Amino acid sequence: MSRTRVFVDTNVILEAVRTNCWKPLCSRYAVETVDKCVEEARTGDPYDTSRIQVPDTLLVPALLTSHAVERAQIAALVLTYPVCTGLDAGEQHLLAHLHTRERLQGVQVLLSTADRAAVTSASAIGWIDSLVALEAMAQQSGVGRKQIDQLKRHYRNQWLEHARLNSRLAGAI
Image (cartoon, rainbow, N blue to C red):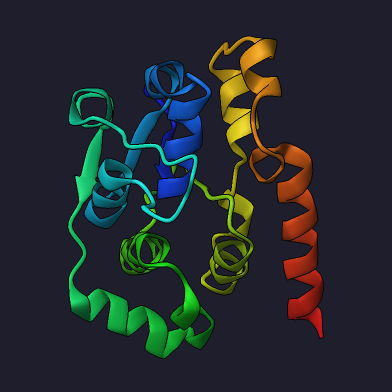
């Protein structure tokens, strides 16, 4: 049985590592990202007092793959969907990759982010129904309740459903 492919942004990687969900997540799912998110996960946010740096020995072997993103892909994304202009670099690279790749028929592909702007942008490019919260993936990966309870609010199912609903309502106007 093949694993479901899931694309994750930097914040999801950092939170999964912080709560010790990373290894179970990568065992259950075929986790992919883009090179920019790997770079950001390696360095962490230098302005964050609770900075997390993910060592290569934990990050790289667990990933199915990390995709290179060209400037032309980013340009195509922001020219087609101006809402994507203000995204953080990792999220912009991730959505640029997803925007330019073809969906595989019969293969479930998910996207996990915990950023409201990224949810709005994912909606714009047609990926809103592929969004999944880290909480849902952790539950499916057999992560214990204690670890799941440590997840911050914006990595939860309820937060994502609210962000998804707001995005859909904004698009209906």
